[in-house]
Image (cartoon, rainbow, N blue to C red; front, side, top):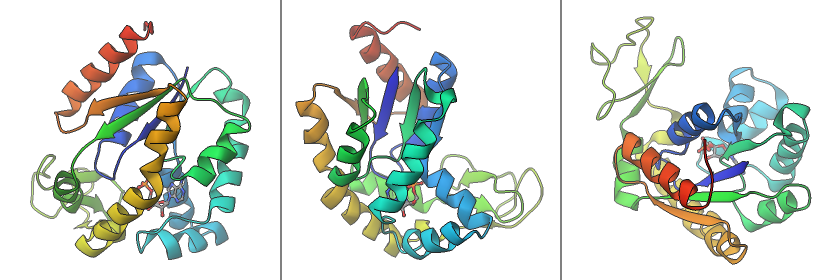
Length: 214
Ligand code: AMP
């Protein structure tokens, strides 16, 4: 089974991808994670990606299309995959369609206000990369990592100005995918404003209605 997750930042794509992967025993990839890893390793690709991602913009389509194509053609994904963060616009969706067809595209629907509230609370440990949220997943001591004691910082792309840019990019470029996949009969809308557990329940029950059993 091939699943694509779409939704604004903070809609819970990463959290649901992780749960779905465990539940259905299907691997998952996140294009944001792939790029962050390159940025962390300071590769040439990472430096280029950082110049776009840091400001809340999408990296060029050609670049991400070729990364995804190479990744998806690997043997380990032949039995199915859950994709978080791709495609992000129609050009990417058309490129993907040449060699890959999602069975379901899950839209995690939340308002912009909720997205801002969730994302601005995100913190990441400068030492070990562990993630927190000062609203939902507080560290035991404010500003410090529970695991390694490292300082918690706000990711460059989680500051209020960058969040606004990312939401604008989502509405302009990513939202047209809703119509694109609705026309192909694969879109399932999910209320993303519920708790992580409730969102997961809604996804599983809607997939069941489509005949999917775990
Ligand atoms: P994410 O964690 O999915 O929000 O991705 C973080 C950043 O990586 C985004 O703001 C973009 O700059 C970049 N990125 C991730 N996926 C894509 C994509 N499919 N197309 C272009 N840029 C992407």
